[in-house]
Amino acid sequence: MNSKPTNTDSGLLAPVWAGTTAADLTGDEAWLQAMLDVEVALARAQSHLGVIPAQAATVIAEAAHADRIDLPALAAGARGAANPVVLLVQALTAEVTRIDHDAAEYVHRGGTSQDILDSAAMLIATRVFTEIEQHLTRTADALARLADNHRTTPMAGRTLTQHAVPITFGLKAAGWLTLVLDAIDRVHTLRTDRLPAQLGGAAGTLASYLEYAAAAERHGHAAELSVRFAQELGLTEAVVPWHALRTPMADIGAVCTFVTTALGKIALDVQGMARTEVAELAEPGAEGRGVSSAMPQKQNPVLATLLTSAARQAPLYATVLSQAMLAEDERSAGAWHAEWQPLRECLRLTGGAAATAAELAAGLRVFPDVMQDNLKLTGGSIVSERLNVALAPHLGKANAKKLLARIAADDRPFEQALLSAPELVHLDPADLRQLLDPVHYLGASEVLVDRVLARQRKQLGNDAISYRG
Image (spheres, rainbow, N blue to C red):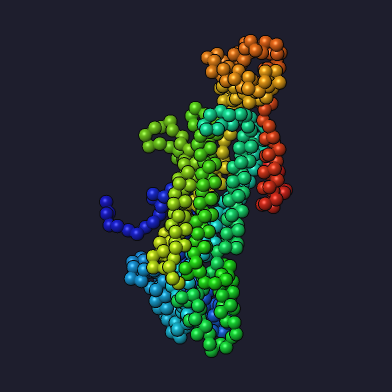
């Protein structure tokens, strides 16, 4: 066996994101290319404003491809400057020189490491959140269909793990849908409005960029360059450089936390409802999915497991991003550097979770007959609340509650104990049996489902979708 160590990060211990698009969008190659894309955007913006020749920007773009850079050497050499941009600029300059010696003079003109790496981070985040929003939208569509198709499917509502009152599975799915719509709203706002380009120079004054632009004699060059640079990257323009103002990173962490924990709540419900002794739901099947290395009979809820795993990890990485808000002076020695890997893991986990949720929701198997059987497990006591209301005019509210508590504690089946209670002999047994039917105690479940579906159609603009069927 070859024991030589390698630097491969294929996600062996990270099944939440391994093999997903999020892995490709956040790998070392993706980060390297994003930093090169930022260098190209800077050159093109400066070329547009007459600071560097157009030909130089063209050559820089031609040279700025990740496969031209020795990635392992760059990663190892980054220890010398505590960031990868310094050596990256040297490597890019060498590549530009091979194509056009004169153009090499214009690489990274006026730039600073944090401008490149922060802007690259926002590029990566934009690309990942675009994928996340698409996955969440697919999840929302699948949940909307479940909510509509099962709007009247009765099941046991559970509070503190115990049967409470009847609900419908459609209402439960509508609750899940609400969380996903909330997540989509946060992701969309972040992606379109709160991921700014970074351009500030050494200490956030843009002095070096202005100095290089002196020959261009352009009034208001700082604003023009900032706008053009952000446009080249497809990012928002920052009002001021944010080298030590880390709101964008904290925002990313907060959204990743919300998305993963929202999906984690859905996953916990699925896990509980898929228990052997509950069996109301089952995950979509696939070759090799859910198998055990020891127990041939097992069909584990692995998609829900991946979602709960992401929900337990992402908030901790997000905490590092929020703590990086404590950045001293105009650039931090350590807080900035501490962000990079937690940021990547937040994006990976959230991207992987969103893809997993879409697969889970689209293929979730629902067993209404089992839900109906489980409703009967308590012999009718699940509608005790309804009985309490119905019996209050005859016995008084407090006395009715005491009676029902006594009946629920009786060793006999609930219905039998209820019908034989001496306090109720004057009531028609048929009326009592009708009160025991959980289908007649679903409250406003259908109305609430409709409200959520109306929100989904309005928010996602898919009024033409027909959910039934």
